Length: 304
Image (cartoon, rainbow, N blue to C red; front, side, top):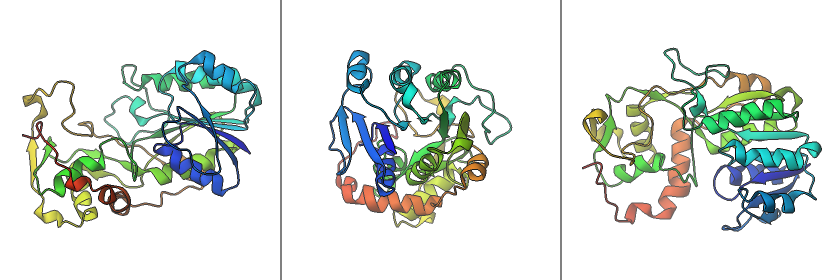
């Protein structure tokens, strides 16, 4: 099939493109061209926010499947549907579990209420539009994504402190429960969705199989970095006692945040392949350590 991937050279798209190529699909990437495209793919350089340019570059193209990995607002995605909708067999959209309203009964399930004030509300608006647009569509809602090439400071936040034998300041008591999913597992779920008619019009939570406390995540990161977790220096604090402004002092929201992935397992026959520790070992060994980030001089003003 002819496949268009929006993005494709940073994180999710890298893994997705590799799987698609291995399966023999004709893959085209649309991005600004700031990073080299993998061998064997077509590249269309452009800015998706330039609607006139987007229309000029894609109007003559037809694609069976589109993966929209980096659309954040409805205004990012609607032009794609208007330009390509008639030719599409399937539109796969990357949303976020961050759209859910806080709940006293976790984990989140796909039909749970949406938080209208979420910073991810643009993704829900997009899902709502897709449901009415008349194209076959599916949305995935990852929780926290990690793995090699992660440009969000998630596992690296822990690694940076662990390899320097620094204390890890953990908000609260360290017992908040969260969930991480390896990017390879997410990409494989997305490919399993593509062209699968049973997924049309559905939303799937995608993440790891197990949940973890903040304390447990720190310990898992230590194991991944070949450090004895019993030697960690965990400092628990009340975040309300500090004003960090717009800066983040911790990479994870201070709440229980986890999602039920059983629907994806049932419909897709998909299973996460990475346990949390194995996935963090993969991230440390194939990304963090080779980057030699542990030798970079870093400042930790918010920690202090």
